[in-house]
Structure formats: structure tokens, C-alpha cells
Image 1 (cartoon, rainbow, N blue to C red):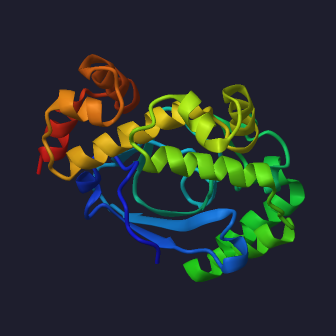
Image 2 (cartoon, rainbow, N blue to C red):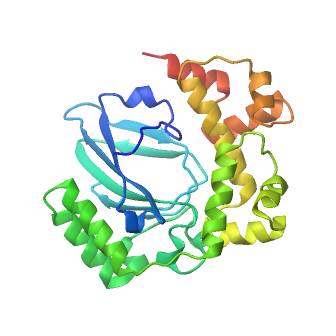
Length: 266
């Protein structure tokens, strides 16, 4: 199982006891493309449906199961999963740049879209999905996912690696606040980096920087921190508190104070 993290899961405590989340690492030969596999299961019985909100990462997902199966491109908006009754979903979360060898065209074509697996991969995709749904265990489903991916004979390239490295730098370095800084790290012009990101990642470098900064803020708030908003804005590279609050609300749907109050509810 991979290390647990709640980055991107909004108000993670709200889902406790509603669904289970497990993560599995890929086999070594697919680790350059797949970050991890995730397994979500829920059994609500007669309880009311539950809406789990997430703030998507810059990753493509291949999903099978009873809830919204398909190929999910990068979503720039808040994602809401309406869970009802009993069900499951198993997904492969691809690394930034990692889905391009399977798609073999610009990944930005998938941004904001959820496509049937058969629409992306044809008859092979339809057969794979049927086999995964018929599998008896989660382990068998993951084996089928890996077999399907291997059959596509993926091969990475230098630009995909450069894109992944730039995304990781944006995630790890909170001092980065501009796309030009990320381009300098990657050793290319800003325009070139934007082209690379459109082709391999699906969204631009400026969007990724903003999303990771809001992820960090959400993680701290959900963990119980109540920082000075102006100090947090400065720490995360924002020009001032107003810019931070406006950016946070546009992505999360609440101001930082409103989000803190929601996370504090039992």
C-alpha cells in the first residue's frame, strides 16, 4: 500500500465511516507511468447519499467499477462524487505525463472530459472493462488493469520526463508562484513549457502552481491549523491576502474561513 495522504480530498474527516480508500503501488515496469491504483468502496444501506468533494490533481485516471467508469482527464473544477447504496470504483492514477504513451496524442484533449473506455481504446478497451467488472477480487482487477496497460507497449520520452519533473517541482517548492520560474527550472522558455504541458499533462504550468498552493492550504486547514491568512498567503507565494482568498474560493467554493468551519464540524 502506498503512503496515505489527504491532499486533494476536501474535508477528509467527513467521509470517515462512509467509504474506504485503499491505495496500491504499481509493478516496477509500470511505475514510470502509474502513480498508484486506488480502490474506493462504500455500503450506505438506507443512509442518505453522501457527496465527497475533491480538488483534482493534474493527473489522468482510468476507472472501472459501478461509479463513473471511464477515462477521466484532468478536471480543473471541484469534483463531487455522489455515493449512494453500495458500490465500488478502482482507478489507475497516472503520473503527470504518464498517460501520453497510452493516448498518443495531446493529453489536453481529455481535460474536463470523462470518456468511455471503449471510446478511447476501442474494442480492446471494451473487452478490458468487461473482464475487470467480471473479476472476483480487487487484486484480480488490478492485474487486469496492468495487463491491459502492458499490452499498449508504452514508452516514455525525454519530454514526458521533463514534464513530470516540472510538475513535481511545482508541488514541492512553495516558493514558486509564477510559470516563468518553473520554466527556468525546466531549462526551457515559458512558451515551450506551456506546449509541453498541453501535450503531456493536459493543463498549463500556471494552473498547476495555483492548484498545488491551494492543496497545501486545504491540507493544513483540514488538519486543524488556523493560521493567519495573510501570513499563509505570503508563505504560499501570493501577492497579498486578498489574492489568496479569491483564488482559494474560486477553486474550493468556500473562503478559507468557511472551509475551516466546515472541517471543524463533528
